[in-house]
Image (cartoon, rainbow, N blue to C red; front, side, top):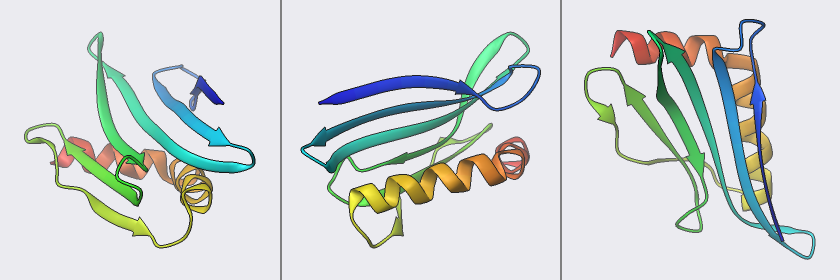
Length: 103
């Protein structure tokens, strides 16, 4: 079973979290969390957390260089990694966006 939703993170609705995940019984078997910002009328990806390779990985993006190589960010299950990624994005999305802008 899977689900997908988009959640605005700021009151101007220019920063969004896109969540897409698949479960089997009570276990997360795949997920992707995408932090997106709108600037000058365009949407840009800032960061992706995912379980596409069976590991909890993150991809940073920079404005100039785009997608950076994957880094493992959590050694637990995909469900644990997904929850950790949700917490990280919701608590630190402003800093993540600033890092994207500087890059």
